Image (cartoon, rainbow, N blue to C red; front, side, top):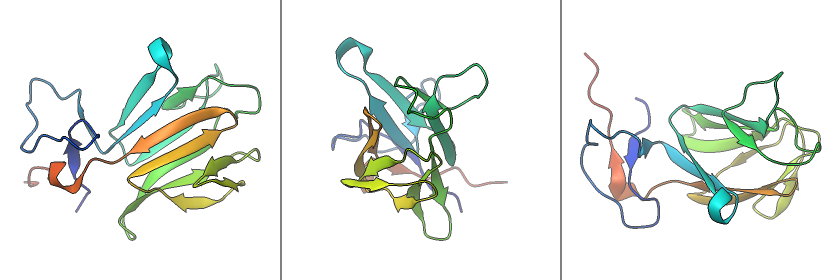
Length: 142
């Protein structure tokens, strides 16, 4: 069975119940935030695998971070592990990322906590899971 569809504001005050079909813009498995002030961006994870990297005409990524050339076009991937039932980040770049205050090199896989801060060579990315009471199960499959 897939993980739950999540609805809520990801800050501890969540709404419980089925998502309103007229506004599915606030529904996702997790939330990513980065940037500051007016340039702050948010991404709602609606897939089991999300690719993170620098913007490029050559490579398509789900989350485009601004950064130096040290930020790879395909820097890391956030994915759900169905066997372990948790969210993880896998480092794809030789430049690594900081997760849980430790530098993680290429091919490192790190479990993500409900609130995790990651440093992508100077670009901070925040990972959030909603609280358990805001989980909304998928409708049963026919």
